[in-house]
Image (tube, rainbow, N blue to C red):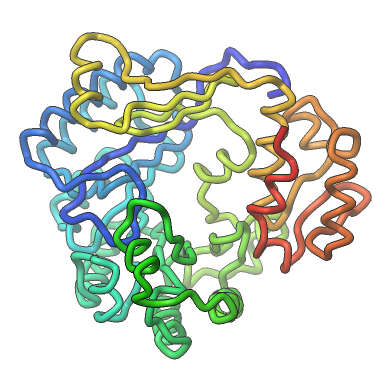
Length: 397
């Protein structure tokens, strides 16, 4: 990718901006909305798919939100049939995010029939009190019921999303959630520390002194996450992401993938982001990165629909990154992964050598104990991964 390739783009992100209820912590663009606006969005999204289809050969597709599973059967069928018509189906990995409250057997069957083969379920917590604290619309029982529905429909690659350092969450509660989640035997686990972002109810509550942030407890919870997931057969491959090498119940020793830097069931779509790959981003607020140009769609569903109805795309901003800036971003994102950057792979990807342009920054991180520099690669240490955002900023140009 050091030269801007003219080959079709192989990753596609679709943003579905609708939710049953806006969560207390959420800063993503989403809205609780009516059926008519969702119908209008569906038509607009199909138009946007038509515009970019000739430059797409998806190996990975990820539908995020919002709550993509909130779309009804008819709306999903319209989108998937349009993708079929445009030759956009058949991806090796096709993920849809879902809320446990919006999983149904008929919807699962439709998605499976059109090639969706991975579900990411937003569990967040298995404690009823904390689910209410976060403003989630599902109960813990819905999690288990929906998980069984997904398995019965044939989904054999499921991610569970969890959150820690939630206000009033104790280590005992966190440990109980982890133990129950591990017992479910999903193929993938994502777990994020609560972030207090502007314009969210949780941030306002923090400012008002309704609770305080306990950083040491958050660190202990992160260590517990790593310990518990590792004991359950997961491998951490990125700050917040853990995956298995084989599906539960199969023999790992027969699989050579266990010796690779990433687990076989890692999310390939996200790995493409972290390695600086190109991707189209469709839907309101979606960002894309194609041949060195970063785009962002309008974070307004009405405006998004209006722009597509006029025959154009709904891009709010577009920026062409210089080769050095592209390389810096690629370095920063790649350091989120445990394996870091092999020097030769980084050079092939960006055309730049980490050892030349970023030697000083690498040395500083090694001195802090945040990173390790080997003969063939550079990667963050266990401690450094906790401060990956601060480390990444040093590589931006």
